[in-house]
Amino acid sequence: SNTVVGYGTVLYRCIATDGSTCFIPGLAYHLPSTDIRLFSPQAYFQHYGGKATIDAEKVSIRLQGSVTDKRSVHTIVLPIDCGCNLPLFRDAACTAWEQQTVGRHFKTVVAVQQELEGPF
Image 1 (cartoon, rainbow, N blue to C red):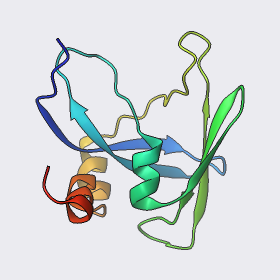
Image 2 (image 1 turned 180 degrees about the vertical axis):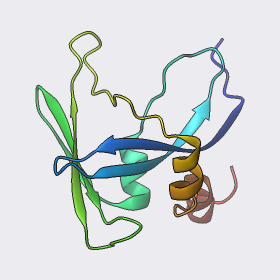
Image 3 (image 1 turned 60 degrees about the vertical axis):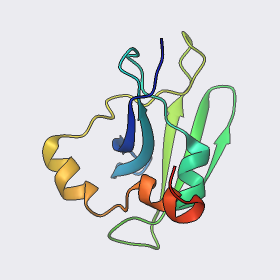
Image 4 (image 1 turned 135 degrees about the vertical axis):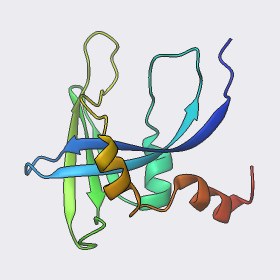
């Protein structure tokens, strides 16, 4: 059965259309019986801002600001996979160094959610 045994903040690494490396935090639920990871754009936008556009071939995510430059804007393009008909992050796993160095700049999504809605 698919039972959630925990949750926390994860960090995805991706390359923007301008070649910049971007890191995207997200709320993740741990389901030991699954081998996929789902990203919730609506949860991301509710906490960090930005927007996305979708067409038949891709999803373009416009990120607002960065930890080093709040005025920066980056766009991430995720092609829609023909096999599953979903936009897929490829090679999004961060190294341990990236998790420690970059991850500390993000307030956890869990903490933000609890501030907005109370403990869950």
